[in-house]
Amino acid sequence: MKKLFLSSLLALTAMVCFQINANAQFSKGDKLVRIGVGIFSIGANVSAEYGIMDDLGIGLYGSYERPTIGFGAFNYGYSDFQIGPRATYHLNNVLNMKDEKFDLYVSGGLLLRSYGYSDEYWRAYGYNFKTRYTSVNLLARVGANMNISNNLSAFADLGSGGSWVQAGISFKF
Image (cartoon, rainbow, N blue to C red):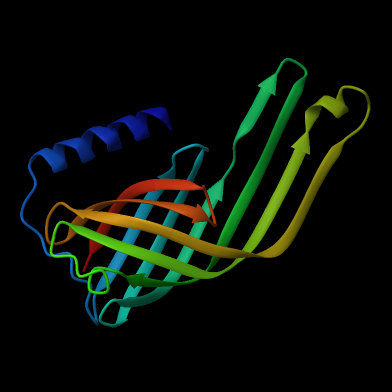
């Protein structure tokens, strides 16, 4: 995972250095796929978006996290899988932004969440503490795409649903 993150970061840096002029406008009929990682937790996320009108897209979002923290006999870990519909509004026209390099957006939706937790500390004393539950979670994110070319951009966003801070690449079709 560390090698994947470092090579992705290196590739992203190279693409930013050799940037090509790009158009940030999100229009009706555009298709966008984002692939990212959680910055402060071990996880990955993916989303797909289709422009139903200028500045507004709908699609699907999914994320998975599985960090484990261990200190001697104490091991704590959880797995968190979330999936659901996502609506994204691109703010460039509303904010009257003239810079074609950036695309600011807000996203919202409802996610089906499957969360599991285990605590190995209690297992050493004869207890087996594990739990798993499913719930509905709110997706609320704000972020930005920085265009590298007409079909490729880097993104960063923050909010609820998946890792609190995420970054990755976007492909526009």
